[in-house]
Image 1 (cartoon, one colour):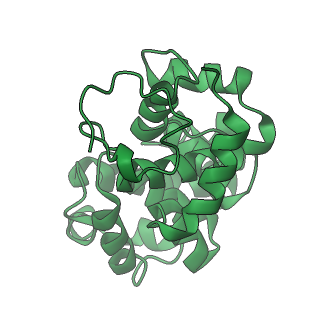
Image 2 (cartoon, one colour):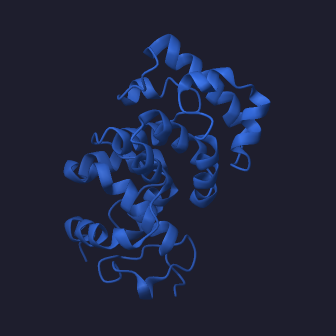
Length: 217
């Protein structure tokens, strides 16, 4: 069985509106602000989207600009972003990020991966999600969902997220890059769980090789 990524993508594009929007896309839809998309994506690392969404709503009432991050003290920022995972570390990163945005980028969020990853707390996944979501530039953000599902489909055979990103850059048609993370995150959160995925209700049931799936619903 060959993996038809065109059909998979078409099905995901059709089904996606029925699912919960990933937090980066939610922030983008609500604010159209690359700074807030970057911050929201950074906060979402290893945190459930529903938690991050609530935190972002609270945070952006007070933090509307990188200058606001520079003004607020670390303890107050920690309180604002709690209970995201590693909130103490993320608060420190955000403080330094604000300063670096001013000093190195004239307060403007850069729209290149090589520049974004110079900011504290911003790895390849965060950089790529920010590029694709805020700037609509072709970039593949590979988080745990994208890594797991791309392998489960049988589209790639990789062991790490970095390997998955490199392989997808090689084989995934570029026209799919911007939305690939968005669609797979939504599917992974709602249906294609790490253990016992809901294969019976998955729109990709007949298109997926189900690599590594030993039990499903």
